[in-house]
Image 1 (tube, one colour):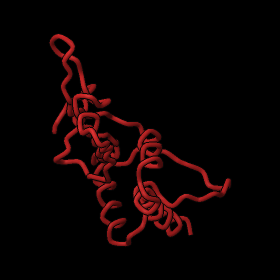
Image 2 (cartoon, helix red, strand yellow; image 1 turned 60 degrees about the vertical axis):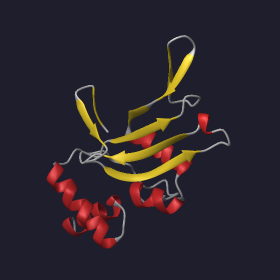
Image 3 (cartoon, helix red, strand yellow; image 1 turned 30 degrees about the vertical axis):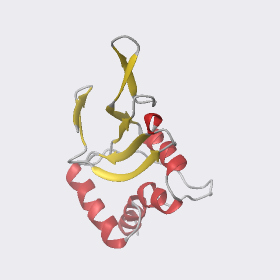
Length: 144
C-alpha cells in the first residue's frame, strides 16, 4: 500500500518490514493486524488492516460498517512504545538497540544523509547488532 500523508510518502513495498501484531478474537469481525515498517529515512509507520467491527473500520450507509486498511505514521517514540507492547525483546532490541538500565547513557537524535543510513543498515545486518552499536563503535574509533 502506498499513501501520501502530509506531503510524505509511505509505501509498504519500499519500506523495511519490522514485525506484526495480530489481534484475532473468536469473531473475525473484530480482528485486525498492525505491521510496523521503517522508511529509508528512518521514519516509522504502521500498516493497519481491520474487520468491520475492529478499531480500523468506518461507518457507511445506514448504520453499516466496513473494515479499512490504513497507514498510520509514528514518531520514533510512538514506534518504540508500540514495539515494547507488541514485540519480543530480541526483535525490539535489534531495531531500537539494547536496553541499558544505566542513567549515564544519553539518547541523541541526529539527521544523517540517507546514503550513510543505508551503509549503517548494511553494517548492522552484517554484524548482527543494533544501529546504535554500529554508530557507537564508529565514534569510538574516531575519537581514540
